[in-house]
Length: 344
Image (cartoon, rainbow, N blue to C red; front, side, top):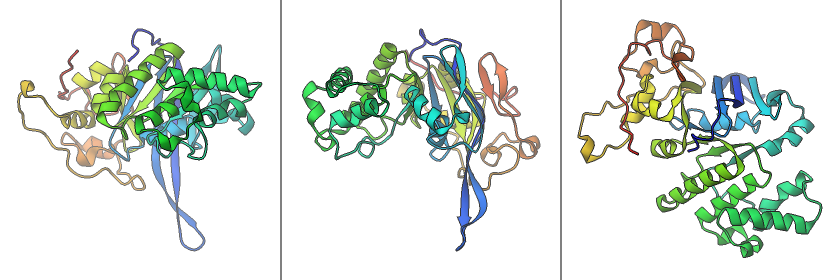
């Protein structure tokens, strides 16, 4: 977490972002509908902060992260990137302009076993971005840069000649982090970077990400379904449901005083300690909606125990409820929801 260094200036501004995947059927592959994976998302990510992004599996978290950096082409909307003294619209860049701009944006994938090329050495896996972007003039300069970054992620100089199969999961993820950092990006999407690792290794990787954030002044979008991991890493947290961001707030504010029923349900699923006492859990019933056939009104209303008629008829918009606390809920001002305790 990087609260002391985060500024109030957005590095990334997302406006009305949508990513729809077409549903094709029949011999002629006729388009019969859309899967609304990301549906009208508005979001700011401030410079040098870690924005946590949580939600159930299938809520659109990874798709949002990949659409922001244009690994997926957006269906609609804008992504604005503050580059020094100018604003760049990522969604409007032509192919060659985007290729040149990509060094500012990188991603760390969830699975370190499938995101590295097994036929390439660590030197090649990590150093290739330097060659592709023309940032080194010689092989020796590439080697020196790779050795430096490999050391910063906790590996040895000798490891650059080895192949990925000879490393453990935690070591592979360190290599993936080194590859993401080699171009010195300003913004990194961390797509569940520790969920595939042993619990004993997770804390090491999280601490490493924090150290590197301080060293390189990086901004993170940290995607996870694990509240405890997001709580440890994030300055602010955004909650996503059925392709929509339904709540955004500073970390402690959101965890202790949620104002959207879905956030309350997520927090209610967090295991409690004995000292907190036992209380009856309110289990979230039903399944997430089909993203190809979303319900009218509020997308959460079929599973919400607080739902009123207005929730079924009108779609709420994400709006400011209190200072720096946003929610997309018609009843946000009147509900008294329960969060979790935060321990220092």
